[in-house]
Image (cartoon, rainbow, N blue to C red):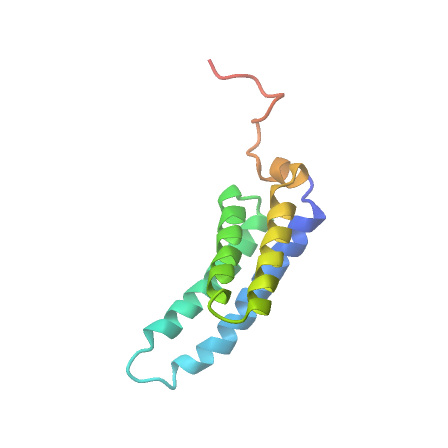
Length: 122
């Protein structure tokens, strides 16, 4: 099955967001002593975005759930900042949820041989 355009765009977007953020924050790792565990956590979150993007492009169903969890995590974090930031992240979450859970995307992430037209296992 051909990948839906929305999944392609979101996969590339997650890879780009994760990679850019990782490069930005990884530069700070060398300068800190003792080891900055909170900064390492930020870098881990960025790596998760890259992993979600790559595997969404490869039709891994778990990757779309990781991508939604990633943006939901940012909604929760932004709730501790400004209301505008929280609203923007919430809007992104709603948009990404719609794009990743609509029927075209669900069919793309469904494993081959499953679905309403596949034979039932005996």
